[in-house]
Figure 1 (cartoon, rainbow, N blue to C red):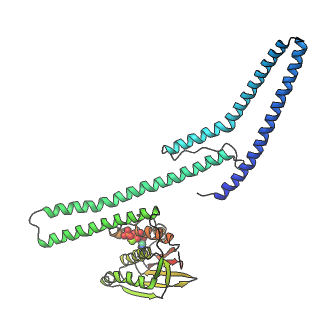
Figure 2 (figure 1 turned 180 degrees about the vertical axis):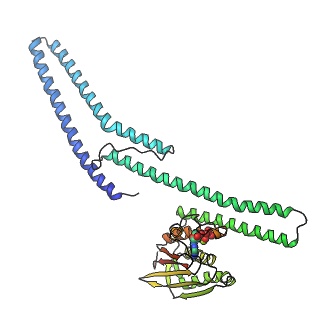
Figure 3 (figure 1 turned 90 degrees about the horizontal axis):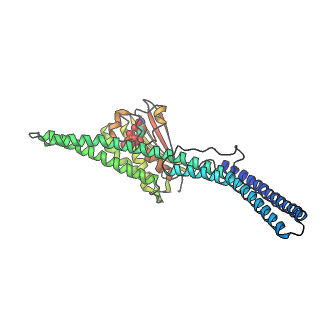
Length: 359
Ligand SMILES: Nc1ncnc2c1ncn2[C@@H]1O[C@H](COP(=O)(O)OP(=O)(O)OP(=O)(O)O)[C@@H](O)[C@H]1O
Ligand SMILES: [Mg+2]
């Protein structure tokens, strides 16, 4: 949770204030008890003077006086408790109840001005912060569900209509093969969406912990590039690789996901020119760059590309779900690395990943 130092300062101020309030409360009680005893002594002397030897009457007057004074003290204690404990606790309970019922918009202002917060104020502020974070998480969850549903709907509709088309009699073998190819490609897209959603979910819930091992990055990158060779060749792109021998102690599976996503984007968004992959060391960190001479992106697009389901280039929107870079970002965060992008519309993009020597 944010604002830890402010919270610490608030806590220290609250502790000072609480000590001062406790001192005042004890002094007040001492004065009241002293006043009661003094009044009781006066009452006793006055009763003795008034009733002389009649000890029964003196005792009765004393009893009434003590009952009255005890009652006054009890009422005073009740009032103090109501103001200093019950009222703030009931505000906290009210707020906690609203949050537990799913209302994350609820807020309660502290009873004291800034700088004089007591512990109840600090609890109220913490509850407010927790509610704001829950509201944000809920918003993200709902938008994630709506994005996933939307991304599922399109391929499902394609599968449905092509399956119906295949049922029609008299289709030529060629058309049948064409429809089947569409069905297979769409099913693959669905499978990749589900796979990515599950992976994101596991990453978000930290169920996918990194399993560090020694990784020869140059060998791993070369292996990944090999998988894209056909696609690069069929698009007539030039491939440039400058890979130094670099070893890191990291999670091989996670790293592979990063390279595959960056390379698949480079191929997808480049129609002519070249793709260049470099690997080296800078200041004790492994640095990988994947550059292309593709469509590039505007600064506005660049600011959102790591968000889930964001797709800047709508002409390629059918070829993915906008989850690749969101996954990459999460994985790199887990591995203690950093990722950045430099891009110019119409000229190309360079993604730069830096990784620590060991996680
Ligand atoms: N090399 C690139 N050149 C130009 N734009 C890119 C490049 N890489 C990413 N982008 C932009 O960033 C967006 C998000 O990329 P991301 O990899 O997350 O999604 P995607 O490739 O569209 O779909 P998916 O990765 O799920 O198949 C892309 O839609 C595109 O607009
Ligand atoms: Mg992608």
